[in-house]
Length: 484
Image (cartoon, rainbow, N blue to C red):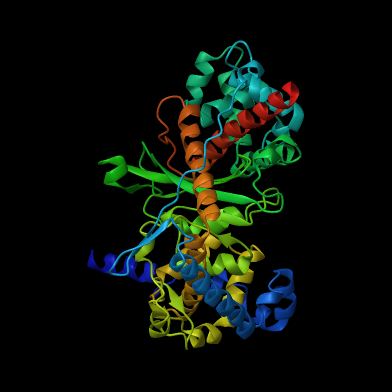
């Protein structure tokens, strides 16, 4: 027992690596091969769009200028009283308030809704399929027998059964004109994760062409997205589930991590263990598809780490989380700008530490290789972060990327304190993802708990549920567009 315990610790820490494993190989196996990186570095950097990040001293100099500018601007507005939402106590602690946006009361919308006050999900799915043909993405995965393609109603029944949490056999029993064997054949042979995702993306691409959703955009040139996790219990034994007394009591569960943009486009979701931190999966969603391009992304505290700050900056995203206990966060400065210097200027907000620029410079080539691996989609970002995080905290790549992230985090926090519009935009976007999680509860009949043990099957269920929610949103856009 002690031997197996030590083996498990060694695997998690990266001391012992498994050559034929998907999750526990060496970090080097997941990155772009060292020989390919050395021979084709210029080409790989160009394909990954990292030309501007190649010169480490230049990148750090630019960030140093921005950081110093925000220290001056943020503290200056506090000292002259123009930032009325920041209060500083006598011991130096500070707090930031974010007043809610004025609510816009909608009136006269009832005339646009159907007189019956409800529309069946079957009609919604059928209507959206007519305009997007998303069912064509449900291609057959098994070619052993040359059987006829199941009927459309079998695919709709399968979507409703999986997405709404109804057992497939039960769907066949309570539905008219549904053959149970045909329904099971449709689900088993056509409902792969890739097929359901392709169907989701087809609806997403159609919605992206509509004019009405653009009314939700705060800025025509920027796209604000957000993500959040929702804990869901697993009713059967599953290797993907973990204990969490706070959410499941004596049971086990997982976290369903979903992404949404300003236009209510649900563009990605994944199922992760409830024991894993959500931050590792943020970049996976941002890199998922080419329809929704994020410029600024928000999460709650569970989706934030300093390493994610550094990685998203190099990938071209602005990471803007809502951080709990903001006043307790450590701020940093570059060598030469000491804490004493800021105190002499009587700044109420000053740095607590100094960035180790030498560590960043020494590992800059490895950082670029790490980011290029993500950008070129050689390995999912979650896999890289999970493996890198499992190593000792003294791993030079981890330490260097974290050190770089401290710079980006400090700039963001100072900007967050100074910019009320940014804080309100973050709150508004996070409210949308929280509403989308409630939407999942409304779509599911009864409990959302998983009856599937395998992670891929759980992902299929979540993707089916997302497709149903997306079809409802798309149907409403089409209906209002017709009314207007």
